[in-house]
Each structure stands twice: as C-alpha cells, then as structure tokens.
Image (cartoon, rainbow, N blue to C red; front, side, top):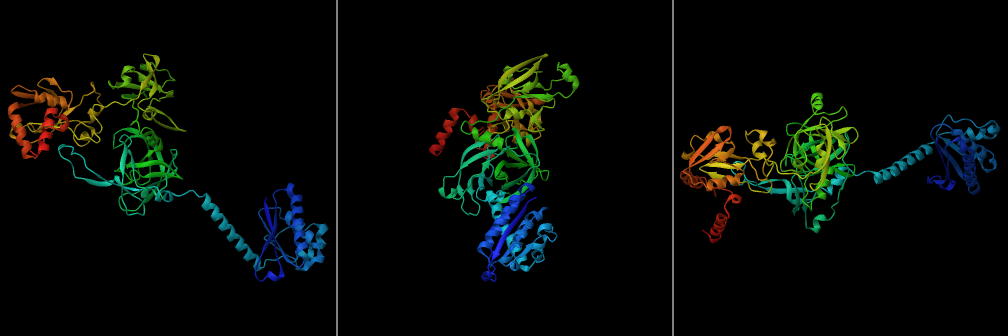
Length: 595
C-alpha cells in the first residue's frame, strides 16, 4: 500500500501569517522499501532540525491502507532522541487516530511526544487547501486531456447551407415547378455569422447522396477548423449528430447510439449502399451534417424513416472515402448486375449438387449489357466473391460477429475493378474475373440534372418510364426487375390524355405501356417519335399492354396537337432532346430573330 508523507515547517515569526514551506516528501510502497523510507525520513527531519533549531515543525502524514507505522515510527524515534532541540515544541498531527504505538525499545523516549498527538484547526485548514489545490491541478490536467465535445468541434467546422432548386413536373414535364428553398448548397453561413457566402458545386455523387462545395473567400475560412474522418463505429457506441435541422436557425446537436449496419436503398438514388442506423433524431435540414464520435467524424447524416420515431441513417466514412477518392475520375460504385435468390432450403441445394460444406446464392437473371453476362449463366450458384464465402441467406461476415449482404463486397469497388467470382455449375466449380462496372437498368432510377423527355401526339402524352414515376403512380413495380435487351431500350408509357374530341374514350389508357407503332416494336421514346413523324398512312395504331389498341387519324391528330398546345400554353409537342436537329436549329433561329 502506498503512504504519502510531507514535512511542513513554520518559523515563529511567520506562524501568524500562515506561511508554509515544503521541506521534502518520502513514500513507502512495500515492505522491501521500508529501510529506504526510514532513511529518507531521518534525513529530511535531520536537515530541518539542523537548519531550523528554533522552528515549530509539523510532520503531516497522509496515507492510504495499512503500514502507517513504517513511516511514522522512525520519524518519532529520531525526534524523541533530539530532546536538546526543543522537543517540547515539536507537535505531530496524524490523519489516523489508531496508529500503532512505537516499538518497545523507543517507547520511553517517545511517550512524551506521542502524547501530544491531536487535530488542531490548522490541520483542517491545511487539508482543505491541499484538496483545493489538487482539484485545481486535476482540473487543468483534465482540460488538457479532455476530448472536445461535438458542439466544440461543430461550432467552427459545420456551416449552414442554403439552396434554391427547381425541377420539371413529373406529369407535366414541359413545366418547371416553383423554386423551393432548403438546406443544401449554393450559399453557406458560419455559426455566429450573419453573412452568407457563395458556394460552388465542385462534384456530386448522386449514388451516395454527397457533394463537394467550394467557397472562394479568405474571410470565410478564417477561424474554420477541419474535421478528420475516422473509422465506422461499433454497435452501441454513442455518436452525436451536428447540423441545422428545421425548427430553429442555430446549430443543433442530438445524441444517439449505433443500432445496426445494413445495405439500404438510398432514397435519393435508389442505389443500395452501406448505411448505419442510429437512434438520434435526424430531421429535415440535418442532411449533410457530420456525425461525430470522440474527435472524429464517423459518418454523414442523410435520411430517416418518416413513419417511425428514433430511426435515422448516416452515410459511413467508408462510403464517404470511396466518393472522395473517385471524384476526379467521376467514379461511382460497383454492381453485381444480376438478380438472385437465397438457398436456405436443403432440397434446392441438393438439386444443384451442393455439398454439405457449400453455401451460396442462385442466379436468376443477368443483365445482358453487363460483363457478368459473358461469363455467368442462369442457374449458376455463386459460392464466393474474392475468396469470401457467401451464406445461403446471401450474407457475408462483416467485422466481429456481424453479417451483411454480399453486395457490399462489390459496391465498395470502383467500376474499373474486377471481382473474382467462384460459381458451381452443374456440380463443378469455376472461377471468373468479372468487371463490376454498373450498367443502366431498363427502368432508370433517376434522371439527375436533366430535363424530362416527352412527346405529345393528338393529346396523348408519351414518356419513358422511371422509378420516380412508378413511385408516384399506380404502375406495378414489377417493371423495376426487368432487364434491358438492348443498350438504348426504354419502356414507353402513356402518361396522360389531354382532353380533346379526337381522343374521346381513351382516358382509361393512362399508365399503359406502348409496345408497337403500326406493327413496329418500340425501342425507346425517341424511336417512337420517329415512327410517328414517319407515319404516311391514314391511321396511326398504337399497340398497348393488356392487348389494348389506340387508333388516331394521322392528319386529324396533327391538327389536334397544335390546338391543344395553344390552348394549354405548351411550348412544344416534344422535348428539345427529341426534336429533329433541323427543327431545333429553326426554332433557335426564330427565337434569336425575335419572331
């Protein structure tokens, strides 16, 4: 056990002033250091008596645990032998009322000294001062070693971002919706400042819902601190979300714990990527704010489940770093480019000649435009990717005892990279190096930074099917799982019928797919427009899904189209990207001439 002893002395002239001088300290940590401790105590007291014969001396002994006599007894013994040095003026104060008595050999010499042990107010005063000093010193040390809080880091590192955005209407693609203000980009404002600085968008990662902004202002960067990216946290670790959510104008900090890791479909792009679920509040305006653990950023807040409380998602630093590393090359994320099913049923595993040790997933369909289509086949069983075994539930090991879907192995690769895929085909194992470059699905998930394409014929509005359209209509989601057969293939549908006498009784055909024009299969929306323009027959026939048929008189439809455009103030019968080049040049020439 450790004992701490300190010798303090006062001269008679300074007693009233309360001055103290530390002469020395000694400690005993074990039986083996007893003699060393005794020697130290003698030397310290000896020096004090030699130089301060008329001084009043206090031997203050602070201790923890047992072994008090090892320090006290030698000092008492020595002082008792020095009666000539005003032993009557020596007073001892101990923090232990039950200290062991001196040894028999020193008992007679020390009795008069030991009897003088008591606890005057000066000891209590000294004790309070010592405790206060220790608190102050420990407070300084804690301040130096303390990890900055999330709010400390956020004040000079997180800015509020302002945007003004607009986009074409989904069902009236020739119109632009009203501008909406939200927290996002264009202008930024520091905490505690009223100045908004212009920001330039340097890069956008639509797949991962991230962007890089640049602010060309030296004044803006004064006092700003950079935050370091850390590793992804573990389950149940506490994190803090910093941002500017709705409900106020100042910076906000909410705390929560990490609940799970999972690949989810990012709402902005419908791309499946790794996300971290936390129970901290993430509200509108929090998007883009850092999620901090300790003194590092472990993710970026980006969305939450609107129908539940306390479920928010953050973009992990692994995804952030992947985006940053590929900004210059406009790198996206890898994709398997196929559909599959799990193999948890023992009978299907036996049917595909899998041994008891084998696990994997069954390939249902492969995107014909992908590199995988050159090597893999339907009914192949994928056993492993890059040497990592895939479970019958499609999961792979992810840190410690966690699991995650095998798509994570591919998504964190760059499109220029390959994956080593081990498959079981007709009972034999094969390995292929396959490019993970993603290909455009038959139904695009989004059309970022582009105007929507459309074509109007006889009041029939024709558009290419997209996932946002499906989400906003009654069209079956079964279209999302279909693979394209050609590189430029699209699903063309009737978006709406603009009422006119020529299209009477066709209102029920909205949201149906157009498969053929005058018997010719439709490849895409542009191809359909060409077929309409090239029509030289009296009637134009559109074959729709569910075996429906729509027929219009060609000349009457052309006249009706002009009339409908004029009445509804629609600028053109088709979007600019679908117009013939000659027509576009003619329109621009007329516009520039003022006609």
